[in-house]
Amino acid sequence: MVGTIADKERGRAARLADRWHAWRAARARPADGFAAEPEPRAIGDPARGRELLAGNLMFAGHLVEAPEADLWDLGVAEPAFVAETQSFAWLDDLAAVGGPAARRLAQRWLAGWIARFGRGRGPGWTPALAARRLGRWIDHAAFLAPGLDSAAQAAWLGALAGHAAFVARRWRAAPPGLPRVEAACALVQAGLTLEGLEAHRAPACAALERVCRGEIDAAGGLASRNAEELMEVLSLLTWTAGALRAARRAPGPAHAAAMERIAPALRALRHADGGLPRFHGGGRGVPGRLDAALAAAGARRRMPEGPSMGYARLSAGRTTVVMDAAPPPGGAAAGEAHASTLAVEVTSGRRPVIVSCGAGASFGPGWRRAGRAGAAHSVLLVEGLSSARLGASGGASGKASGGARQARAALESAPRRVPVEMARTPEAQRVEAGQDGYRAEFGLTHARVLSLSADGRRLSGEDFLVALEAEDERRFDAARAAGKLRGVAFQIRFHLHPEAEPALAPSGAEVSVTLRSGEVWVLRPEAEPRTRLTLEPSVYLERGRLRPRATQQIVLSGRAVEYGTRVRWSLAKADDTALAVRDLAEAVDVYE
Image (cartoon, rainbow, N blue to C red; front, side):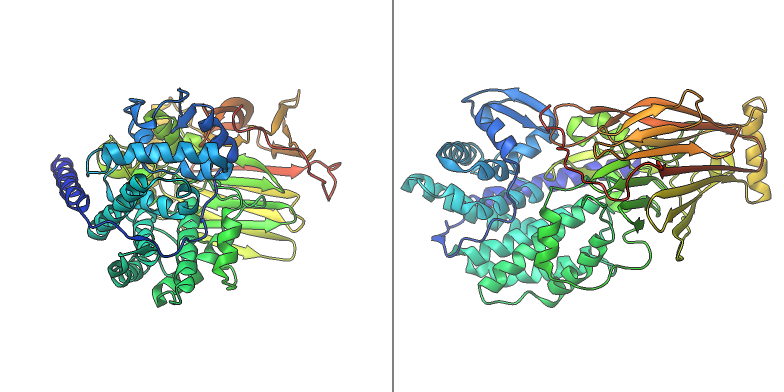
């Protein structure tokens, strides 16, 4: 209770500080013009841009059909929707379309924002949103500027200067991780590209040095363990480094060292299709952005041998396997953490096979909470419970798209010890890990062993539930007695990608999974008479879609009746699946 009151007081103080500094920033001296126009860091999705032009305004999973409407008159109060519109991230999509019509729409919405909110009012004056807006305005200056009349250009230059002044005063209050890096990078860009704002250069570069030292750990990871955020951080750092070099200034030592550390960490997180693991609020990433960031970073350090940012990766042939092999993030990042310890994802070539349901933030608070639970991951659950339980909302500070402040539920009773070992032999790659999230309630430790064959055609798995000590045995006996001595129920879930088509064999002994590439994978439990194999409904939560995508999951169910239970299973390519596959099938349209 005391902690909740303190959190509310901190939130109120932050809002008052934002309001005060926004009011001051709105009175800043306007910039004189652009000294340079940086190359755009991010070009978005032209299909989404064309939808915006047609009046189909979809933000944070909400679709508003409003041709010719002003974006700021829609009246949608959902915080994630407001944050996404206020961030100006949609500029990426309109810039991807290009042309006079897209430019006129972007200029109209820009002018509308300045007229309504430019004097320091409205929900967009938070450090994270203001920094993202400033970065987008600079990033797409070459797209926005042509055709602006003198009054509109003067208003825009004034707003740019006001944003730079606000971010200069409030960047420390941005949430840790990506938002704080984004704030420092936007401020550096403002000092480099806007005439009259040169005074921001040295303090902004110093701020970026401080952020790189504080936010990027020694192994190149983030405290949030969100791989997509790490990719965006590298993209921002390389973009800013390019702007510094164009201005004949070298990136600072901490800035350069951060890029050097992040690049190999990200390479160690990639799936075979170039996507990233979908844990702890992250998605697979914008196609092509990771490749561009890695190329711009130029770092050639080898990938780490062990886990990277808490993820263990196996890779052979066309197959990659990524396991979440660390406790969920805590502290400021706990509000986005997933109960995904020991969960696994599998990709074959361009095709995801075993997946996580993903972060449901764009579909509202209910889906956000569901996406964080253990049942939304390909992992073992005991009695249907996650290895870490979601607490009541309000205990942790989180961020909506762009950084709007919202209460987030922190994870409670999360695993504390997650030992992991990795090994490589000529025959296979292997990872062994365990977690104690079920120990306090059931006396059980969950261990998972994965082995990927050298040709990548067979993944062998073993899941153990073990009572390790006498006290654990007493807890297990109590849990078993509560179940009328039938044992403690468990389920091992394998969520499938929506484009993977499963078929349960008539015998019920195996499930074949056909990919759009033509590959066929077969999942079967091995000599485990006490387990039951079923197909059940599931969902795939993906940003940019109107609704969650329906899919299926394979579930192995059983009961632990002894102090040690082992379930063995395998996921292997069918014998008649070719070694080399020519995969030319197109992905399903995002706007289906």
